Amino acid sequence: AFDGAVSHIQLIEDYSAFDFGIDFEITKNDVALSGYGGLNVDFNKTRDGCLRVRFDLASRKLVLESVGRETKVLGEKAFAYKRLLWYRLGIRCDGDGAVEVYLDGDIAISAEAEKTDGGKITVSGIFVSMDADNVTVSEYGEQTFDRSVHWREGQGVDDAVSPPKPAKKGCGSDIFADVSLAALALMISVLGLIGIRLFAERRDGKIKH
Image 1 (cartoon, rainbow, N blue to C red):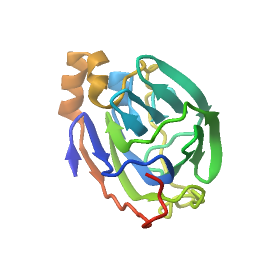
Image 2: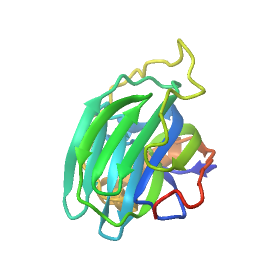
Image 3: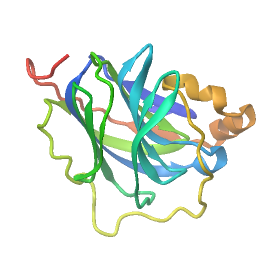
Image 4: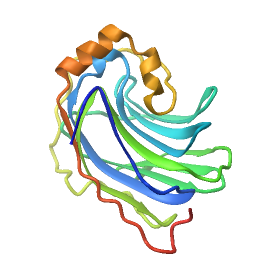
């Protein structure tokens, strides 16, 4: 359980070639008050930067970007967002720079990034309250990223307020550099509990570290 404007989980191991998946639902969306936020997954994360997938509630886009001294968008795709709707987000990374991003079983983004030696994976909730389940890391090419097991027909409600356009942020806790103190204080006061249940699956000898 986490409580705060920004909460995250970091997986212990380093990964380079892998499939990553997570089921999640947004239970409270305070992004409209900050102009930035949603669900972030950072991977190949090192001191120099990371690759990041943003389920961005401000722009209502799924975004893949390379974050370092400069931030470069590698691909993006709009999605239909509803609060209290369960999604399944998937990331497939081959270790040589090829990255695919999936949403509910469909490929949303396919791009080439610079090859790295891998790094940490971090899941962050930013200015939202959310539930998450079935967080899995497995051998490259193994997962299907089908719809969340919690998804049901007719789920979800529309948010009443459309958030403003987001600003670009750095890796990890660097986002605080661009969030005004007033907005941050306001968000901490209204943000509810973020509950994340992490179930990481490893298969000995199969995941490339």
